[in-house]
Amino acid sequence: MLEKLYDSRFELFLSSQVAILFGSLIMPAALFETVLDPILFLINLLAGILLISKKPRLMWFCVGVLGLSAIVFIVSTLLGKASKELGFLRLGGYFLFYLVVSFEIIRQVWYAKRVNKNVIFGLVSGFISLGLIGFFICMSIEMSTPNSFQGAFLGMPERPELVAEQLMYFSFITLMTIGYGDIIPITSLAQKAALLIGLIGNFYLVIITAVVIGKFINQSK
Image (cartoon, rainbow, N blue to C red; front, side, top):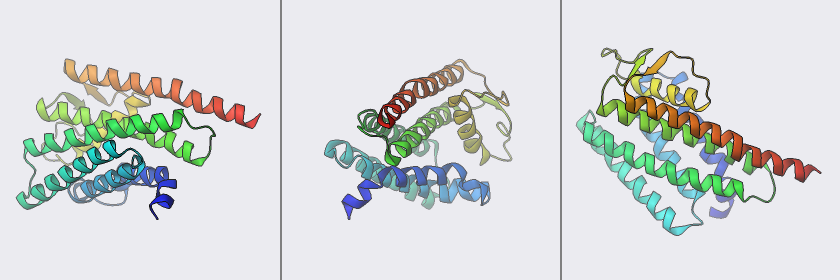
């Protein structure tokens, strides 16, 4: 059973990532951010644990992150509102998890001998993981120094539930080097974070994606 799930590890991981990114399109943003989004992240953590289950040390590290995230979610639910300390703890756990999983995805894609659907799914999920890492960085900056980012719905106290959604959008737009300019990093730390996210996106597309395309061309020949 576990072996069959492992063969579909990239599909499961990517599916939960897509739900995190686009789940707010089918339900109210406030409800999604406070209730469904944390649950989806926990599901994504489980899929990530499956993805690295061949490496026991990394797997148990991610199991610890999953347990920590579950505790933070339960405590936040009981309190009715998450404190800043719990928020930083949750973001830190997610950041470490996606850092480890992104590295493992890139490693598996890099050393894959044949380009099949698993490699393609892994390539896409790795890129999304980098966007989520950028999101956690931006959220941490905004939580520690409010109004580090300005534009769109940011800085609107009457709609705090949209801050996370807007920073998620900013992270992926920057990662893809689109840069509409509707959200602007104001502080020096926020600007450096935007620069880092953009560089990571370029390196991933130019190096990792190019390697996979090269393997596919050689494989076709």
